[in-house]
Structures are given as structure tokens and as C-alpha cells.
Image 1 (cartoon, rainbow, N blue to C red):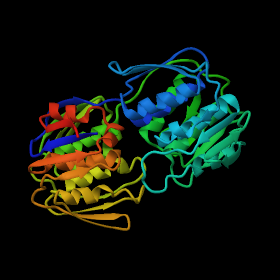
Image 2: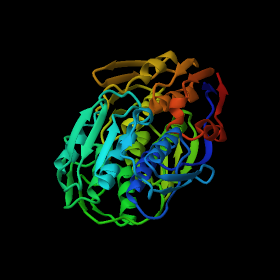
Image 3: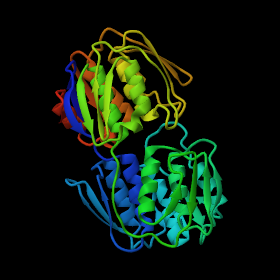
Length: 420
């Protein structure tokens, strides 16, 4: 099992290109199952563990997939899709795999999909998905850990989410593309990844309006055509590098991203004393010698992303004062606080809120990642810690970051991957 060895205290300097967004690539790959003729080409697909998992899932369903990891280019030929069952041994590895429900149901009229696995972040139910498909005319039952849905075709309708659901919105989009009537999604997720998925489907011939706003309207079409599409850059990877630059007092140029997708992150980092300049496809961040404390509440986009809460906390650990962090998306998303305390952080957690008293410096220690984003936040803190740190269970980090240690090393960090 691999681990990172980090000797902290080195400012990050240089330039790095951000890879394609994992959270957009996964649903786009799954959405390609809706295209029944020809090969779909998807570019800027990051070579991550979760990408390998989704390839296994759609290949099992009958799709033919080729993937050039060096070029980050994937082709999907979904003409052979003929299986309606997504088994547990594949689905348990990743929650996003539940998105196959929409395309299978749309194409075959029946889907048998195992309840998903993935990171443990408190309650992340699929109730939103099930209620939405029932509202669109599907008959749904559950048996032996599988959701069984039948509808031929889905009829469309009015869908409402009690709170914005990223994967719920995407799954409804997949189901609505071929529905009999118009579908309206109220309180839809507004994340940039939703926009990327809608842009992909629209390029293939779908008629989706309002993506990126709380109300999305889908007018049905009879079929989609194969396309060549490029996935947008990963704003969460970019944010991780930004906090790493901030906590080390570095100067880093990031390319391959839309800085407008990081507006809230930019504001909070500037509150902490960083300088940020943006261009059309990137930004430059300059950290301060000593960061200022900050107050943050995580919230669905365009609010501060929960997926960067751990990175912000890692940076706040050495700020000159007390920071307040309130988690409203996944209230159990504070697993990293115990590991940060091992580095010498002064953090108190109660009822979805964390109080972080900045310390003079962190000290290297043996710590471990509990999920993708917690692992990233711990790495950020270790980059600032004095002495040697060992980060265990980095396979979690590998699910969301491609060769993170190599990119950090190229910026001057003293970080290596070793086999434990």
C-alpha cells in the first residue's frame, strides 16, 4: 500500500496544468450510453481509479470502451448495450455509478441497479433519484439491495428536489432526454459539472435549457448522435493547489480551468491575505507569509464547496487567529480533524461546526486519509508542517487526483510516494 512522505516548509512556486474534472467526466461517460450509433470521443478524461471503475461498469452493460491514458482520450461505442443489471461488485466501489439508472432505463425500459458504495460521508441517499423517476412514470421496487425500475418510455413531468442534488439532477437529465413529454427540474443543482454534462448532451442533440440555474427544462428528442467532446478542468483540484500555495506562502500559476467557477474560493483566500489574478483559462495565486483567519460556511454551488472544506481547514491551522468553519452539506465531513490534531492543530468540532485556533507551526507526524478530500486537506497541512510527515491510505487521494505528488514536487514540494 502506497503512502506519501512529505517534508514541509517549502513554498510552492511554478506552473501546473489542471486535469479534467472527475465529477464531470464520470457522468459524461455514463451519459454516452444514451448514444446508440457511432463512437463518442471524450477528451481530457483524467486517469483516475474512479474512471477505471466507470469503464468496468459500462463495459459490463455492453459498451465498447478504449482509453488512452497518456492522451486522456476515451472512445465509447454504446451500440452493444444490452444488459439492464449493474451488479454490486462494480457499484460498491463508487457512488456515482448509480447514474447508470437513467441511461439504462431510457434505453432498455428496465433497469436493475445495485445500491451504490463509495466514500462514507454520512447520509447520501438515493431517495432523490427514486422519487424523481417515480414522478416521471417509472414503477420502482427494491429487492435484495437492488433498485428495480420499469418504464417504457418515461413520460417526463415536474421534478422538485428538497435540496439541490448533484447526481440526482444528472440522473434526471439522462431520463428526461427521451421522455414522452417535457421535464422541468426545480431546485436543480447549479454546479459547473452539471453545465458540462448538459453541454455534452446538447452537443449530441439533446434540448436542455437552464443548466447552471435552479430551474432546468428538458424537451425530449428521439435520439442522440455521437460527438467529440472535451471535459472542463477540475475546479476542486485547482482549489487544492490554491490552498497548498496559500499555506506555504507560494506563488503558483494554474491553467486549464475557468476561474469564474472558483469565485467563492478566491474570495475566501483573499480574505486570508492571498493575492489572486485571473485570466480567461487560469489564475495565479500568491500566498502571504502569515495567513489571516476566516469564517466559512459550506453550501451548494455557488457557495463554498464542501469538497474544499478540508483544504481550507488545513490552511487555517496556522493562520494568525481563530477561524470558524460550518459544514452544511455533509455534517459528518470532519474526519480529517483528528489527523490534523496529530500534526499539532488546535481544532474543536461540535454539531457541524469547527473552531480552528491557528498555531505557530504544525509538526510532522504519521497521519492517514479517510476519503478523497480529507486526504487532500491533510496533504495541504503536511506541506506546511515542520519536519517529516507520512500520509497513509493515499489510495483515497488517488480517486480524485492524478499524480498529485508529482505535480506538487514540480512546484518545489518535498513529497514522494513510497510503497509501505
